[in-house]
Length: 230
Image 1: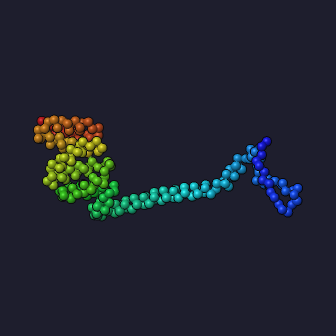
Image 2: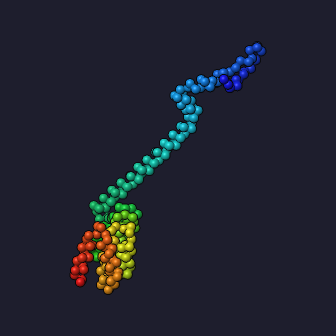
């Protein structure tokens, strides 16, 4: 059996015949090491690496605390916006709320509400402003198309007819928007094309409306229009 080199010590207080005493305090025989239990191995590993392991645990704890802190901050910020929205709904300050939170979903919803009210009151300049705010704030959301349709009609009624029709054409062609908004835009474009005698364009928009699986309102309106117009 091979053993590691023994560490000899020299003690000047001892006679020469006793100088070859071996310091075996830190030597572990290979056969003995094989008998060390798993618990002892773990204990030895911990003693040798506890500084490194402790540092890793500390860094991980900081990351967890930071992540949870960001989530709490975000939730708190959203709760504050929701409270402000509820307060604005209860008063007459929705327009101010929409302008102050023009980049947020709730700001877009508030802007859409203000725009609809202004449109109903035929204040088309104000409606155009707030439909534009809503369309930007709600980009990628289900109500984006709704805001853009309102924006198109507000453009039309502020004397920008060609811009309004171009906006409707963009909406009808945008597959990322809700089907209902695309069908509404297509309906108005179909009527405009029919009145102008552009039959190919009319057929194209009719096909778009009829292909929709949820635009039954505009399909029914199209059927009524065709009955009355023919």
